[in-house]
Image (tube, rainbow, N blue to C red):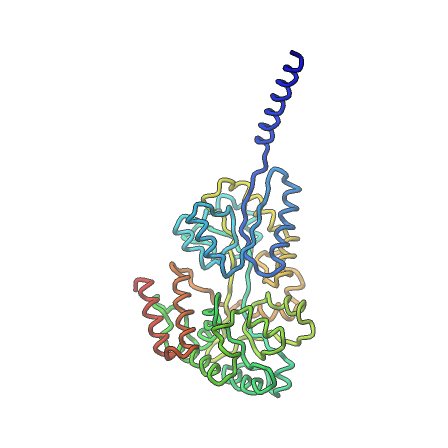
Length: 408
């Protein structure tokens, strides 16, 4: 009888323990992290570990996904009913996510103090129809970067115009095992590499009436120059086989005279090619100065069942010490005022070279179906680069397709 009572008591205690364990089980926040570099995953895991120490009732589950497959991954997870609670996304996707009801408006979570920590310029892309749909998590502007040793060997000066870039690339391409101009034609941002020229030639992605600007004289002049450089062997062979990372790797190997890039490449050069001599310069100009301003967004999903815990983690990640580590480690421009005030962002010549373009930066238009429009542009560029269509015919067909996508 005694043993039966002991057994009954033990079973009851075990059941109570299980119930207690269940009652106090940690809340799990699923966070999909876009991979900017090999540093991104370890950084966010470090932040998550610090957060969990301070908040033992919340567990942060981090999944790092490469940028090239991020949109497809999120789209698949959303369709399957298993989206994360929060994710880094390309800001250009935000309008579609908001219109689909996928993004959670965050104005009710934003305190005046927290909202005031951000630079207004970078908050604006996350505001859709008067509602804040996400926070800026990363920002950059683009610039031209040249290998100064190759320019010196070729006896040419850094270019200020497209004609000067063309002439410099001719001479640099004559050096052994060297390409004058690194041109990407594969995967993400192949269209952006074209916009740099489009904008500085005086064109734009969309006309004032909302129709595509790809069939403009400026667009034709810009892509014709790229095609001319390909045909004359001034770029690396077969640009459509090269992603932006492939082009950047060629530059880090000292094989390319000129590339167009973002600030994140600079820490990579310093770590992987410390003996490479380079300079960060504005894009060549035909008619007007321009650069590509880019932000990425940290978005809270409307389907999340743990929004309160997720927001607590979001606020935690924006502490100055973490933003400083993230921005300096990845090579980003700051999105918060306190980090922007650091001497580093005022005195470092490389970062200053990228930041100099912000006053005349252009952003990808916040419009519906942007990814489909960008893909249409990329396919047209690839066909032109491969010689499958003429520049004029390729751009005209792409503009027609984009106008159809836009219902214009």
